[in-house]
Length: 103
Image (cartoon, rainbow, N blue to C red; front, top):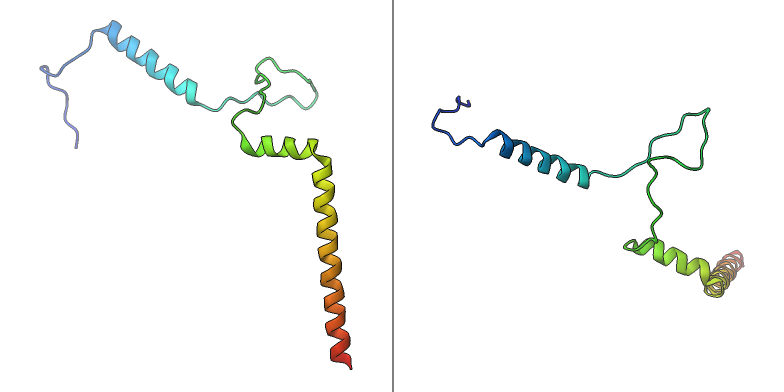
């Protein structure tokens, strides 16, 4: 149960209280996620007044890796070729086991 504040409790002057309130509001506004508003269905726009500025993706390792993979198509083709070879070996081994059981 909370009690009423005593007259001897410390009180800040109104200016100081207003300053602390504003600092607290700015802090929480700063850490809130930034999102643009949803467009109206009938009003499509490629640009919104409160849209986030484009970022270079700094600080997102997954995005950096994705972009690296997009650029390095040779590596991507090697991985696809390797995987298809592994699948072929698996299918051949499975077929060999099946035919040995049938005999």
